[in-house]
Image (cartoon, rainbow, N blue to C red):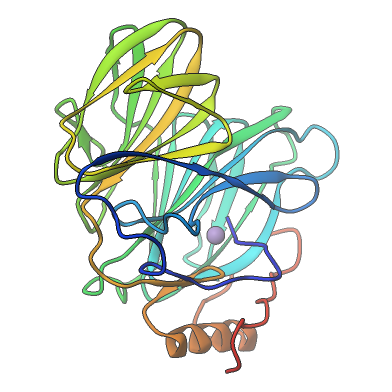
Length: 313
Ligand code: MN
């Protein structure tokens, strides 16, 4: 998806408090942003308090929203550089189209992983025939400096490892957990887990001490190490944990992301992950001139125009 804010601020990975080498419970309120007509999303990353969790640099929770009337989701063609996008629907269906020629519907349980590298453009839309509800998460992963100019790629994973533990269903979106590894290709050590409790449940999630972690509730509410967490709050957990106690009293769903602290200063603006303002200026100018990002075919609408830069170019 796209960052559709017209007043689009710059996010620098080092302009927030330093990540914690120790376990912490830092509560960060998500903020509402608008994703197209009528759809409000909750943005957990980046925030002023926390820009990244490992290489994870963007996290939106969208819906649930009724898309049975009107056009549904319509995010027109827009560019990306320097990142991977992760689309994780919980409910509904989305069609992805990109400048490599892919036109891929995605449904719950499936993962779309798009590697922008040096540049790609894509669109996302609700199909004409669709379920009434739309609900999900969109995440971005910053590419390390050595890989961020790679050739663009798109991968759709129709199936991911799903484990059952203590009555809970755990999907390994990316990385490895419980001895299961996601087929998704990533470029730095990280993990993404979706944990579903159908009701009252308790389990210990194994963590890696050298990773920092963050958690976002997608449905219901949970207790993480005794800390109550519900929709509207992102919980930064820091590094240094080997387990995370997860308890629920009713049906709930939580997204857990983690990774090695990224260690590179990252500059994020609009849909670009870069290192310098000059790179962002070039990418913006290329997109506005129709250069370098290919063409998305078949999207029923207009491409997105870049917002104004927040600095004088
Ligand atoms: Mn996008």
